Length: 156
Image 1 (spheres, rainbow, N blue to C red):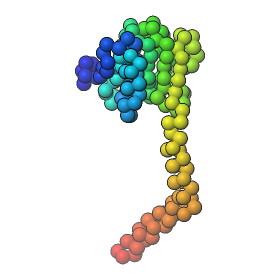
Image 2: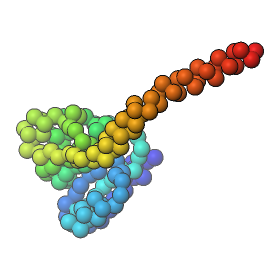
Image 3: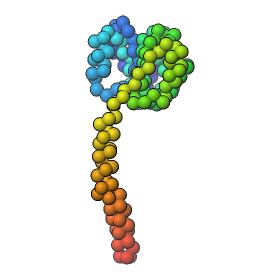
Image 4: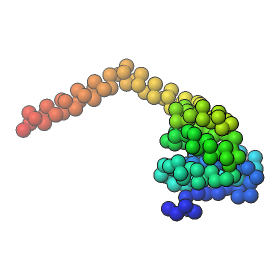
């Protein structure tokens, strides 16, 4: 994928430029940014971006970035964002273990994340594990597999 094909630009005449390092689900976020007058550059590649690619995408004019948990945001990236006029970085993740908040603070960059994005999934997994434990699903599976294996051995 060439660098021109790697990025999709939405609302190219927007006054405020936002870089999004991976395509995000849904379209509401994009509609909100466009309605706010933003030009939105979205990386269309499924490959993880390295620091150099992110700095290149930020360029010399970028107000904010929406990044991913797979990217380590530290001194170098926050410096590039500050130099491009950036004021905000949002981590598309629940936590911010990949973000050096001290570096962001030194460069005057506000940091946000997406709390609550996994609340429903966590609740569903909790219910599934509770049912599994209550119904002894793991034990039943092991018993079934071992019994089937023993039957095959005896049949031989």
